[in-house]
Image 1 (cartoon, rainbow, N blue to C red):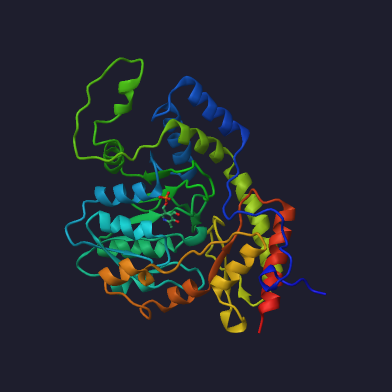
Image 2: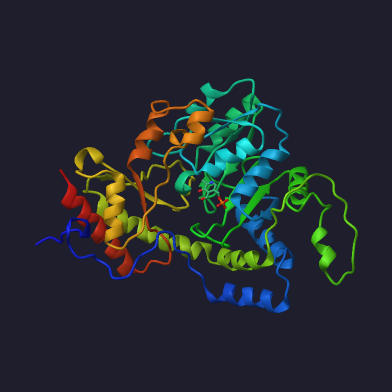
Length: 399
Ligand SMILES: Cc1ncc(COP(=O)(O)O)c(C=O)c1O
């Protein structure tokens, strides 16, 4: 007889909980963090510089400036492009609040546009009609790691004289039509939050090919003090600094950078593990009442495979998305929602007079999406357990 899900009174499939987005931490970063603790250099120092050098090479950018989150990266990127008051910045509602909140913190207005249902990304076709005289920037988000069509978005931005700041929180390995994400937009922002493809605990990076932006961000990320202010604590003796703007405390520490540097050395190894899991999932779920992630891509695209998002065919199920997640939780498996569309959250809805019905594709995804674990930490038995649990729940609750 088929297994009865724990949510319907059966026994949980797993004794131990599989956490959603658990990172792989290995010995080289553990040793390097211990080294920082032993030498006592805990702040911003040589390991940050080493991580920045390695990262800019990986993403093929001229400059990489580390910060303590992608949120900080987005904020600074928006500040250095000098937005006039009441500027509008176009972005997607299918993102984490940090993308749009950074726009608000930079004194601008987030303008949401709908996404393509398959790629779940904003496209030039949705962006163009939303451009006004006040539009000064676009923030494409490479959702789940799948590239936006950057060729078309870049053409659009050039035609209208608009800057591009990419939110590449999911997209460290992403390539758009042969060009590495991090080397295309005016500025690109990455995240090393604990669930991301490589991690520093908390952490972020801005990359750019514009020297002036790079210099400004470096200064703004550390209290607005003249560059290389961190040297003041070294054995090179005290050096005066000058404050050149009201900056922020957004710098990355050597402890974080020690983790990130070693993680970066294994980025492709982790990516190939996730690719294997991804294909295994696709195969296992293709005949169930779900839509598996689209595999359509333009030539030269690379998906970073950050989030494995299933769309539940709720029309064919007796449970909704939240009940599905609860059922999975009862089997001892964690999951996530990426995302409830931002215009459905009270802050954005109330402040910008947005409501359901405005972005139908985003809403369709928002109502049905569920992300199941995809970390490179999962072993084959974990992956099989996840497949078994998801299949069991979907089959049991199918109409
Ligand atoms: C699309 C997107 N943008 C921005 C962020 C913010 O990143 P961080 O947590 O590094 O500030 C996240 C984090 O989850 C994200 O998923």
